[in-house]
Length: 248
Image (cartoon, rainbow, N blue to C red; front, side, top):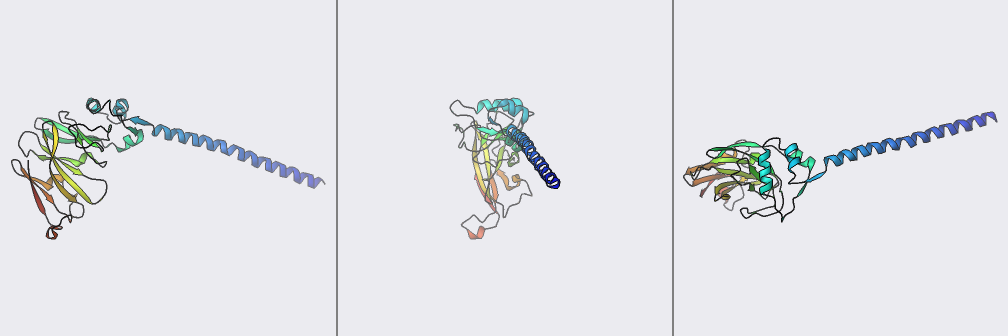
């Protein structure tokens, strides 16, 4: 009888201890989850694309006045500012890249911003895509239809029309396909005008040399762009060098 009573007491004690362990564990788990959720929420708070305080303090550690200028210029009462995740903005901003002189007397750098809004401005052909901004604010931004823009995709090609303002090149990617595009832009009447385009085929053309090497000036107002691709109806030109000629 005593042995049976003792066994029962031992069983009750073990069950009680086990239940206590189970009741403690969820409390710890809840605290951990709350901390994770709190941390995640802090990192994923969305802000407006026009939030100058956040952008200037967390991303633009220099050139703050330039940022303020562009946010004011491309904001609109008729279009709401778009919302972005703070962490994504920090992670994806690639900085400000020095270009050189677009205007002969002024050095310029370039950076990329996501769309501020979906307004279409009169001097631009598109509105849904990232844009290139220049630290020389006498130049307007270069709006694109791509979300795969990088500061290194903009480059100088020389003053083809000899007006004191260098033409610029753009490597354009749709974010898919091995067919990319090289564009040449000239600045006239306070806006960018596309004056040349060629296929940049990743199967035939190399990233091992500057994009500018695929564009060359012939004489004033004349230039040519190298294209090597299979995207042609002329089978004889597939994979062959083809210098396409353009005039300003």
